[in-house]
Image (tube, one colour):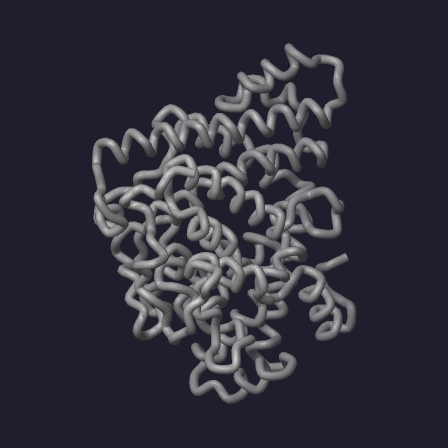
Length: 382
């Protein structure tokens, strides 16, 4: 393996953690972060949280957990090619969706509307709350006590942040919110986009919302469909779909790597801090790929995300999450420490944030069970 580039994150020069830890003789600081994330409760819950298709609609559709694992693999591949720190890229990728609500973006939209007067709700910021405040496994502190670099990547992997996001940064952990994140975090962010496109096509084909010929004229994926159908016209559709998916992933990753190499040659950063202050992301699609990817997303939005087979359960899920939030806010009828904390909250805003934290942490099945408990089995979920 090639030595790390000078602009890669160096675990031996980490800015540290909020709480002191003993040295590890066998793992780097970023490896320890990865392991803490994998062993967290929030990570396990991703298994039962919706990606696009609800968890009970089929055993082969992606969940937030399988999506996260795919993003992690792609982030590592990009990091390796660019001589970055693979462990940090992996840690950020594994944590990037820890703040997602039940029922995917449907739940997030509802919580954002309900929290509009209390700072709003964003799953990226919620992930930071999860790893710094809400995970409560350790004897000496709340949170996972991750390194500064991993926290920075969770907060800023999609770019600089401002406004309410700054308020969620724990005291003593200035994550430089107005700068860009490390290249490792940027690798995790672009891997998220690549994974979304590829596996949403695969799941849509599996669900019967799309057929491969429907994609023949779609930029980016259309030429790949033509190649696959031309070479293997008579094999099973599932094999054809997989050949399209893996070629789409490969071409996207190769485009990102080539584009990043050109950016790095032009900017010539000498350190990870030079990357943070470069004024723009250095890992991204080429202009041609970005344009084609935007058109592909438009097709997926129209044909998949807004299709009635997807939207019907989405509407039921939105109603369910909204009813849960309203009931908890009014009654604090939540189990254990959650109900006690909400009842003791000093303000409506504090109470609302506790309710949002509780609802956001739910899995799809738990949200359905809680709705049945509170509403005697009546409600939007069939």
